[in-house]
Length: 94
Image (tube, rainbow, N blue to C red; front, side, top):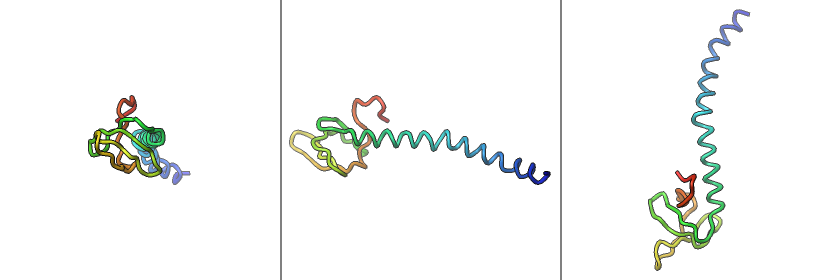
């Protein structure tokens, strides 16, 4: 019984530390990743987005792994979905 109590007192701080780490770091990050993934899936033609490079552009055509986006009236380029930072006007952005 003595060994059991010593084992419990030595493991308990690690369990508490893991719990704090999970609720303050892992769980919020998963929630943010889920919201970002949903935002990417729901982007439609005409939505304004900001890229990770800081460009503000308009979605022309959503595709599987890319978006065709318009930077200005004359320039249409393809942008990989992984480089979309957030949607402009979205209340949950950033």
